[in-house]
Amino acid sequence: MTAPYPVHATGVPVLALGETLLVSLQGELHDGMAEQLQQDISHRIADSGANGVIIDISGVEVVDSFLGRILAEIAASASLLAARTVVAGMRPAVAITLVELGLTLPGLTTALDVDRALELLTRRSTPSASDGREKGT
Image 1: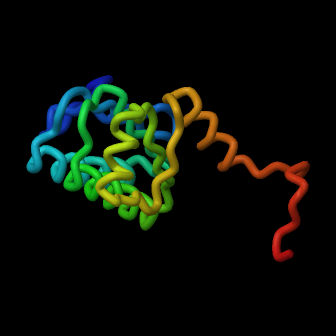
Image 2 (image 1 turned 135 degrees about the vertical axis):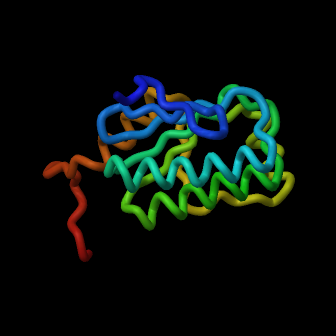
């Protein structure tokens, strides 16, 4: 029987919300824990067929260059497994720090909160006939 809130070696729960995985970071992650989280998320995508990952960082005070790189690598791994990654809940101080460090987070989309991240993933996975844009033009 599967636990309703699977906790992996990192101690960070990776929850399934339909076809989306939700990871909520609370406090700081040590380097080894961050690397393990990256592996846990990749395995969960592969095992579940999830098409989206939301990483809620609203509980994180500081994102250093290492954690920024891990987030970008999670997005790259997810993309290779056909899933999109959205980082939600970034504090203004964290955004300013990332800019000051010159860090870019390729492959990551950001949202103000988890609700908007879910909306973003849902909207992008459902093609709209009234989009107003034609492909190939």
